[in-house]
Length: 365
Image (cartoon, rainbow, N blue to C red):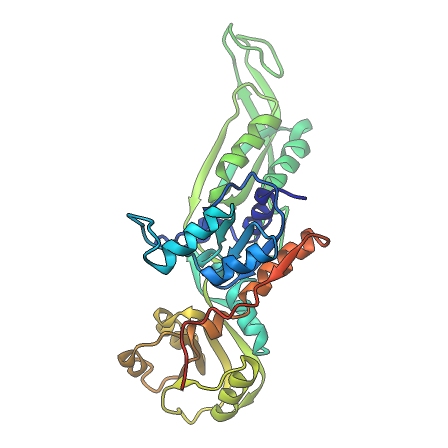
């Protein structure tokens, strides 16, 4: 059986913790990740009932979308549902792991799942994030060029959207002269060396910096490796908040609301006044996403689907699109299926389960 850490590593390769928002609390919240994993339970929320379900199914890892520990606790006495959940998990040596806004922000995450349930295509991130990439520039002897380049790719360099192994390589001449204490790769100490080199330029996600530098130094033949790292502040079209896509054909607003209710298995929807426009281009954000309303309007969307919209925020749509509140739980209810798919692909024979507990705290009468 794999260790809990191995399961977490696979999840974090899909949605790195560094992609989470600054206010969030993703990652391991209880337990020891170097323990052997007896089974995994996937859930939207981690509650006492979900922990009991994990105990009954002999799962010592719960992967939830929402972190049960969101703000600091000053005491753990069992007075609140959060404290009781944490106590029960610790008493039974259960690791609780949260994958929240980092899963929201990856292109194949929460919003892609919601878009797929609605049959949208031509999906794009609604509000791309900036500042996630860095650029490495280094200089390598020609005969070591491919070895170093492959090591950098293996460490995470060169990934741009759906492309990998991306780099720019230009040939030139390098000069250096070591003092009497050196043991140069080519040439002799205290003599000028002029060697053919390749300038390598490639990108990587900033959170991979230490891994990339380690790979560079381990595979570069020089005693002193020259390299530069530049922070890149351009938007990353594959990481960010919300999503926008298109329906197969234009439909009227009533039909679109009916489509949402049927595909998300809902009885109720809240929405603004009808705009009298047909719906083709749809923006969405699972969970609390009304902060993206301006992005949705500016994108030319005919409708924006999200949750947790306040009374006065419905006015902000200003008849420019159809604004729809389908509920927080309802727009994220399929999230555990993402976890399941990721781990099943990597560990096809391992014990993994989708929680059968409905954790939605909102009821309708």
